[in-house]
View 1 (cartoon, rainbow, N blue to C red):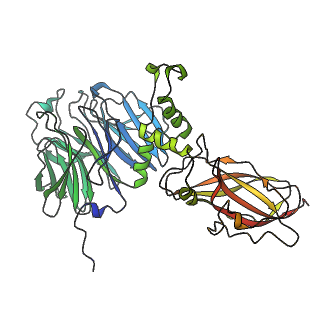
View 2 (view 1 turned 90 degrees about the vertical axis):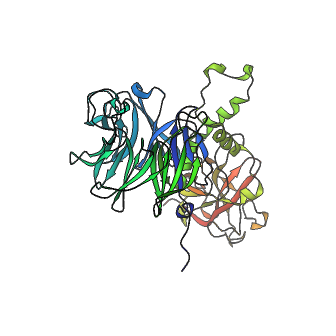
View 3 (view 1 turned 60 degrees about the vertical axis):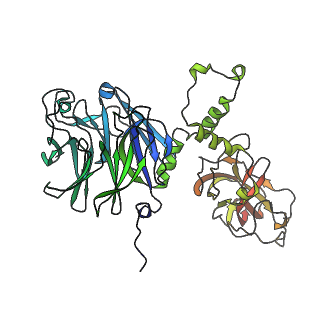
Length: 487
């Protein structure tokens, strides 16, 4: 029997650890899977949630008590939506529940439902009418109910800061209308796991474990204002803020072994305050990195614009808007460079081509473009990658050599040894762009316009990728097709 993995990283597999943060000096999203945080972007961020096939992200602003709510969502390609909700002030957390993201407001001590695509949020629950009297913060869904976390039921604005708040925090079940946990000190990020509650008691600087009756079983001192919690096997990843009285101190993620309930590792963050921690798939990290760069052509234009002189720039420097990070823009711009031979050989087209088609018809075939390189593939100037079909007329004996099997690597596109078909030059169909940027080691469907030759007969059809300067490249889809006269 193989030995059990000993470390928290071993428990992740292909998953990644995503951390949100903000505070003095800024913030953003970080991938801390390796222990060395990778900065994905620099947008200060509070709550994170996965739901409805998207990552949801609440942006954070200084002086947040009266700021508006900005909610971003990401699908597999990058940013899918930006929504602004002026009614939600001091937004903290986001949680996917009952088919929609829900956002907590600490200023109004409220929970709002935000239906995707809706113009206005719907108030679900409000605990206090005194601004920031309770400091409602984290949300969690457990067994079909939405629960909210708060510092306590105080009757004055931010009374929870005045030293009389010890043990007054709670976690409240909105469906049942009752508290499920009480006696907590500035709680954040409650999580239910294997019959136990785990809560960050922020002002205590601990991760606290409670039983299903809310009785404290254990506490581990993280020695920081704790906030943000996720699990990797028997390990808890706990966020901890910088000590405010220590100049230059940074936040961190503390790794707690739940078996011994002790801190076994600390990961330094490049921001002062941690807020949320999620275990996500690698595609989520990739989509965050892409961000607003989903439109590759526009992002490449941003990249090229950085190097333009004032006389060649369409707008003044003071009007410049940068939606994508320079790193992402540079990576997308690199797609417009000439592919080297090795990369070209690791791309291709897969398809099942029809055996019989009608002469002269215009139709559409569904093909699949595959990118097995270590970088993105896309239709970007000056050397845009496109896909197209070519028709080679076969002689009466079917001369020209047998067509290779669909996606057969033994007959790569552009191989001069693949045989010369009868009938002279091939009949080329329109080249079409890829519908989206294709990340490394991914595939995408393409609706390929096809114009069938007017002359009946037997043809070899080749569908392949093409790039100016490289020509036809990669593994092609190929088949012998009979073109029949109409009727």
